[in-house]
Amino acid sequence: MRKKYLIISIIIAGILFSLMYVQIYVIRGGAGGVLYWNSNEGLMFIGENLEGAHMSPLRYALESFLVSWGDVRSRDDLSCTRIVVIRVTDKDVKTYVTDLPKYSGEHEGCIFDFQLFEGQIYALSWPKMLRWSGSQFERPTAEEYGAYATAMIRQKTQYFDPHPWEFDNKDGWSMRQFGATPHDSPIVLNSQPMTITFHGKSWPPKPLSVDLVRDGQPLQTLWTFDPEPRPVSKSQYYASFLRH
Image (cartoon, rainbow, N blue to C red; front, side, top):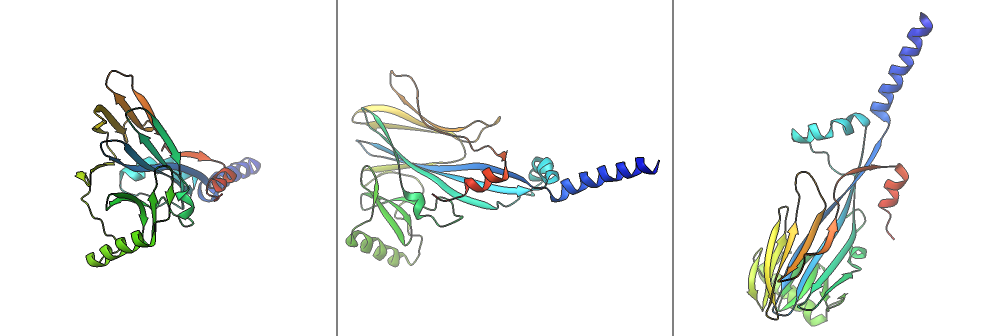
């Protein structure tokens, strides 16, 4: 009998130890972006983040329930994994993978905002500032940097933004944000009408995506991203947040 109780006690102790001290490692994605277009081209600037957390099996099992009650657990790690630019014209689509993530600090997400200033699009996280050249981001000239700094000083803020949240026909450009909900953006490039659609969070969950529909042509998916959380091994977890 004593042996039976001892075995049961060991099993219970093992279960309690696992629930309290063993860690489950979880990663999930996050993404956001913005669409700019003029009469000749559409430009989508999209940043992809990776978030990570480690928690006990008990917390993992109760996560959905706890979140529904407002107990949202903060992440343990954050990294900007990729920033892409998708260029659409009336003739073709090109995707550019940029080197902007290297400018983000350790354990930081995609820190850049994309702003239109004096007819030019910049990636900005002041004092970091880079200009979109048409195929890559480049350092601005001293004159460009100085002009933005002067405008910022006049506004007396480090978060100077020369335009509203979304706008139409400013210096020939219009802009829409990619938010949490689906968003259709009808645009016209060189007299050719088309629609760019951002598919945000949905239920049941499915990957985020950006689709392009041209008149008389089938839908074309330009970008997809799966943000759903998933458990990984400890080694996979820490490898995911190494900077290359």
